[in-house]
Structure formats: structure tokens, C-alpha cells
Amino acid sequence: MQPLGVLVSPGPGRPEDSGISLDTVASLGRAGVPVFGVCMGHQCIGQVFGGSVVRAPTGVMHGKTSLVHHRGEGLFRGLPNPFRAARYHSLVVDAASLPPELEVTAWCEDGTVMGLKHRALPGVQGVQFHPES
Image 1 (cartoon, one colour):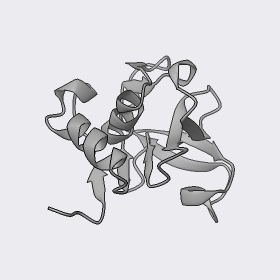
Image 2 (spheres, rainbow, N blue to C red):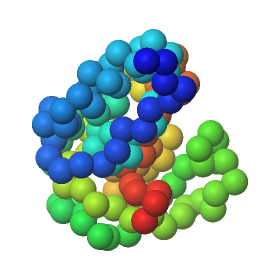
Image 3 (cartoon, rainbow, N blue to C red):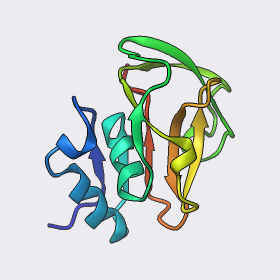
Image 4 (cartoon, rainbow, N blue to C red):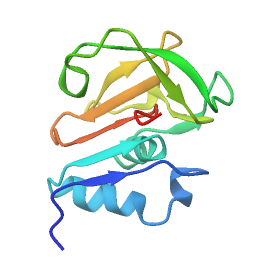
């Protein structure tokens, strides 16, 4: 198998309960295959590359919207700043736990990480919010 890219989608529970998602992010992401994570997929990226996934300090965010701030780069180029996005999660990547190779690309006013990317593997990136919603 030689995928051109992988989407690691949302799902219930914690990243370690996500079946093959953690292994997929680790093996394909490190091999240079673009990996885009949404919600739990974003959390898988954070966890695989050294961050911690913790309970959201804001509590359960199922079906709620928030303003997402960004620097207008990469995935966010051309988007309003901030923009409103839907959230469906109770866990987040802990910003304080992120290693230097992971960069926060989007955030909420409360400091919740809403986007991240790997500095050395530019195809590896994720968003906590649901862009399809």
C-alpha cells in the first residue's frame, strides 16, 4: 500500500481506544505521508509526537461553536480571523505538553489548541474542530 495521504477522522473515546489510528499516524506520518487529523485524529497526532491528551478545561463541547484564531498560514490561509467553528469533544491536546517539533497553528481565546502541525513533517497536521460541520 502506498497512500498519497491519510485522513484520521473523529471518533469516540481516547486516542488509545482508536484502533489503528495511533500506529497509522506514527508509521505513515514519520515516513513522510501527509496525515490530516480531525478531532480525535488531531489528538492522535499530538499524542504520537509527544503531547498529552487531557480533559478539556471548558468541559464537554459537543455541538458548541467557538471562535478560532490563527496566523493565516497553511490550512488557514485566506480564512477570516477569527472564524467560528463547531466543536464536538471533551478531550484536548494540552498546549503545555507539546514538544518543540509540534507547532500550534490555531487556538481559542481560552488557550485550547485548535490546530497543530509537525515542524519537520509539514504534511502532518490536525484540527480539533470539525471543518465539515
